[in-house]
Length: 98
Image (cartoon, rainbow, N blue to C red; front, side, top):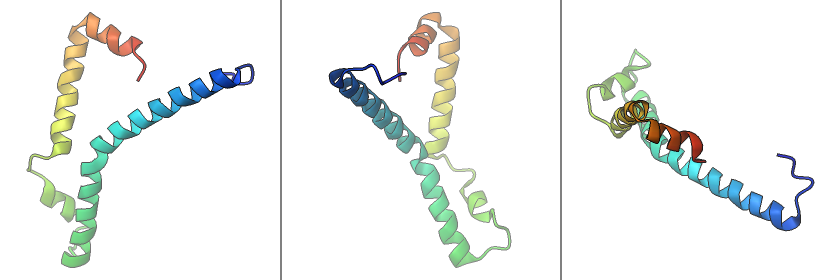
């Protein structure tokens, strides 16, 4: 977008829109990635205190347990399958700004 021709009021409105969109994206991003951060912190703790020979052992310890991250991934996959089946929902997601 070329911002130069915008009036102060229009520029301020665009700024507010961009700020709101950015906050929404980071809120979602934070919800999805919180579990990954927690897993990383656990791995750091595990490596420091257990000192395993295998660098990825800490992540292997976490395998086999239902996690929020896994549940979210499965939920997003189910949602994607519903979208592929519904032209109405597909259009809503394609045409609605984030």
